[in-house]
Image (cartoon, rainbow, N blue to C red):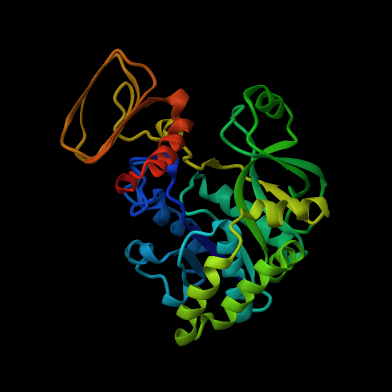
Length: 371
């Protein structure tokens, strides 16, 4: 067992429904509450188990929706009540991470926080811990730091980070400044990034002194910052917290932290990156899930579902079953079949990213009952 890093607090934003994993992931059972790799526990629990040894079991906070509080506390029975920060509705990552930063800096002015998504898969714990330790050293030096993943293929499913010059920080020998962020590219562009060792995948992990992160939010969006500070001032007063959340939270700007913090900090030379030499995936679609899953594999077919009844002949891809139906596949390649009690999805790995369009269409047609 390792000793926790002094002065560090881990924050787990646990929001979003994972719409590209519909109909498995739903509003009432989002991606982070599923076992998607056959590990025997949910992605949220896996995330907690990675972070608790680094921060300490009483220094891991979860930011989640009110509707998911009971499920989160079932998954994490040891989490202190004061470390569960509840949103009244989703407002994207800046509000979620900024809220945690504003609350924690009031409790501990010099605290360093690290934000790690609840629904990512990471393998290689020692390498992960080493990357986090370096990122914390960079944060102590006053920078905002992210962890980038060296690409293993020319992926079009991830954003990219371009490294600039090296950064000299004691305890972070691999740290570099960030030149810029790049949105998800087309395949030709992804191939050029893959061939250029300056590019890393953007894994959405941010480590910073809480006050430094809040100062960047204030510089870019003073109104959003003021709302977060007002919420934090009321947070540890039970009588004031609920009314403050109901009044302020819905007014906060809905925007990703990449745009409010990461990109502006990079432009100022205040954003650093540490490469993460571990296996990482954000499980962004069923094609990713098929690659990750090794449990229940039959030939080239990945199977998820405790009571799945699958017959396969010369087929490959992934089947996720939550019913007792027999599913038979004959001569189909890279197939994606997701069978739930009220919805059935059939597509291919090539088109897995387009599942989000189905969710959007269901919203427009008023079929929210299956979302």
